[in-house]
Amino acid sequence: MPPPHTKAYQIKSYWCIAYSDLTHCVEFLANITSCFFPNPDIQDFFIDIHLKFFQNCTNENDPMTEDAPQKVVIGLTLLSTSAAMHKRLKDNLAEML
Image 1 (cartoon, rainbow, N blue to C red):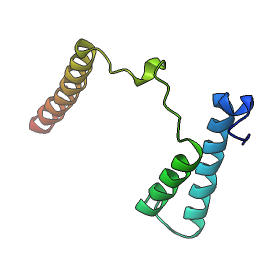
Image 2 (cartoon, rainbow, N blue to C red):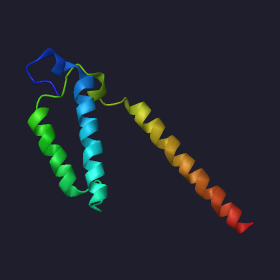
Image 3 (spheres, rainbow, N blue to C red):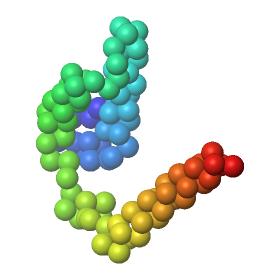
Image 4 (cartoon, rainbow, N blue to C red):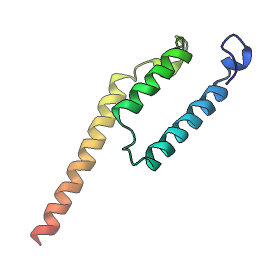
């Protein structure tokens, strides 16, 4: 990963690739040591890495940091809830027949 003071560090793909590689490496090590992945120790490790290398990662101009409009949240919640209820009713009906 490029040093934090360079322009290359500002390019999201560089640190995304580094994060992805780290994730794959840790997951591989967890698998060969028969550890559950993820686990609290691994999560703590990633938080430590994040705090060390990505202290200023939030960007106030990033639209992804804004909350979704309330109507969208309600709509998606209702949609997923009704889909789950529909499936459950369908399964119950199939059992009754």
